Image 1: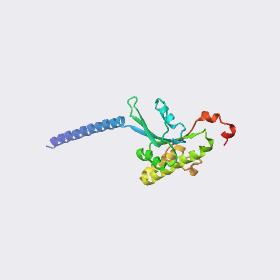
Image 2: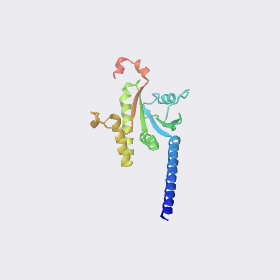
Image 3: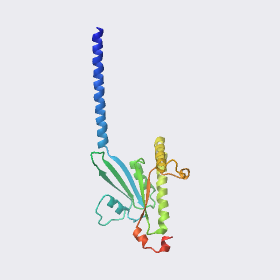
Image 4: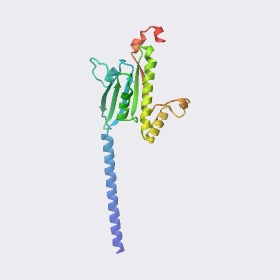
Length: 208
């Protein structure tokens, strides 16, 4: 009787192990399916001086034909999607801010729509107007900083900690300037536009 019970016990144990194995395999398949079908999204926010070539840069990045670029009045959105070699789909959201003037509410739209975790900013400055370089850069930077700070203040503490940790990792923990830096929670790239015009300016104007 005990032998029969033992046989039954082994049979049940074997069935449980088989079921657990099948469940584990199904979960792995679902995980791989999710990885390969769920797009990995990143967001790029392009802002800076007015009429500096932001739209042209975006069109060139997406390999779009550029016939006659009209000025961006407020905020424009575009995206690109790429799939290659059976890997997960990659989605790039691109937002373009037409003007820095009175743009406080518009600055929030890309950050609140997609979050700050996979966010980056691209500031374009008009080098053909040296007298405006610092003002435009300062306005763009402060707008990004204040908006990001406002969003993080309203978010979960854990999200804020993760963003701050990633910001520190980008500049390295051993950076001697780290204690004095006011880090943004996302990468920022600063680019000078209309460099060809800048090169033709008088030396006195360039030094302005």
